[in-house]
Image (cartoon, rainbow, N blue to C red; front, side, top):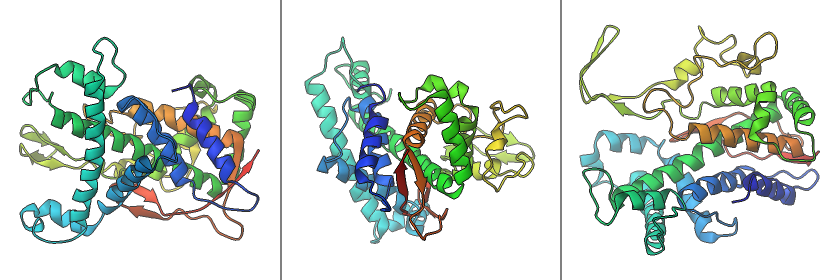
Length: 347
């Protein structure tokens, strides 16, 4: 993969979709570009946007994420012994997951047939090399676990960053003065003759603050991921027995009125001090915390910066003519924007 190739291809595709006054949906374009990064790390290859199998897999993944917010899925989680006999969306999720699993299994088979232990190409190669000739389910090194780990990395590495970037563009069309200030900083630090680099971030405090505020207000995983206590635990006045499922309400900390100056408003100043220098905030926990903090946090931070700055370097975004921008959301496995269109004007 060439350096900065995904942002470059995304910029090219946005340009191809653009015509004066014509709006389009940017979600699928972002989805393709972001997904190809995790595909390079897990599968060792990127896929063309015209690849029908790849597009089908992405569509299946998007539908799984959406269906997980359905009340039927919540009932299924509570009463799995009952729901396995009843029809409903939970049955469709099983079918869609199996299609993605079949895709991953094919990739694992291809890797096993061309494995060079002295030169691992990606995550699958590294797992197979560590596993060796014999599977050991007790240690976690077996083909079934490899399949599910690859699926987890592919799904999580695609959906979360895509959704955050989608929120980012929507906030930019809702707050054009913030978009203009970000572009001014990009023009000063990066210019127009080269693509942004991750090393530019330290010199772009306002852009960095805007990206953090997008994550805070986007709040894409309001309940984080469920955990389970591995021993009896006492927290404040409460006793939590071993084996209890725990769901951290990240929404509460990201909008805590005692921690944020304007918790319910989009305000990049939350992450800037009086001198305009970027500052971290203790209550900023979109990746959760502790030993089970998001595995892809560092990758996601780099992706968000490079994609966001590359897009605003080359385009100004606005709502379709005559339409008011909307920040309405739908709740599935993640809190994502409703289907929307925007216009991109080359700068």
